[in-house]
Length: 241
Length: 79
Image (tube, rainbow over all chains, first blue to last red; front, side, top):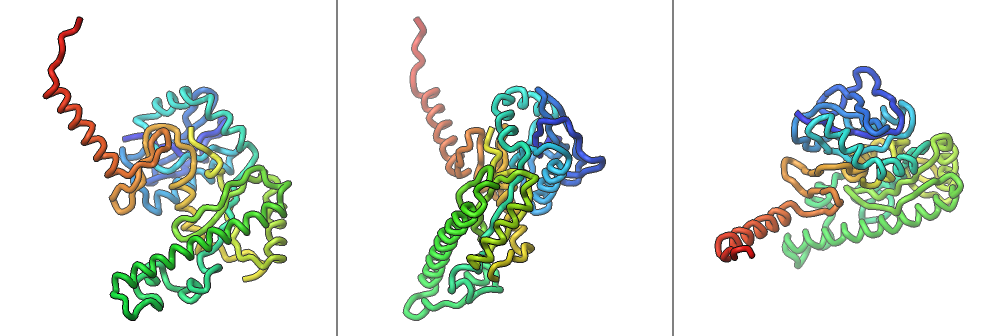
């Protein structure tokens, strides 16, 4: 067995009773160097599955609800035992404390530009999955091309669509951040991964509603399609220790 | 969809996976991200992304080189 780490915090808050994490293991707290880690027991290797990813996030969300803003840890970090976690806390305290201070009192909101909102070619395939699109979607490049060439051309078109979406996301980011500058503690550039483009912002917990209102007004004026997800523990602002 | 927030449901899973697998503090040890039991990348302490196969090849080469050094190069007497 090993110890799986979910998040760190500067206060001594304990997990709610019977909070379960990866593979249903009960989450408990370990303390060291004035820091608290929320952990659970797991098998030695934890491969990512949707259920495990959800469980990890559920624990971090519970930690966010329990008191001070936690420093969320990336999925999959295990240690030989609880004592090893305490040792790492001691070894990295000088790095971890500034990171906890940086996110204190804040949450992450993620602004997501949906896949089918930007390119006409993608709109034409709305409702089909990526695989459907790749294998059986409209194919205007057929003709003289063999199936292999046509497939590569479809890939190239998708790459351009991704680029267009990423550029569109940056436009949205500038518009939103200009409209809500005073409410944003931190922000990161747009990223595109797994079919969506998004950018994270760090917002004070007390100002989440104000930020959402500012974003909604910007979207209304500029007719921008966008989803605002969160609040979350600030994964994107946790850095690496 | 103009001027309103979108229905979030279809995006949440993609965002969840991006957030939990790609972000968050890396404290110690190593994090292996794999899909369908195939290791894709390994994230080490210095947050260098290394293709697993490339890393393994490098390790094999290092061991071969070490073997060559141990086996073929005469050990000089000290002093």
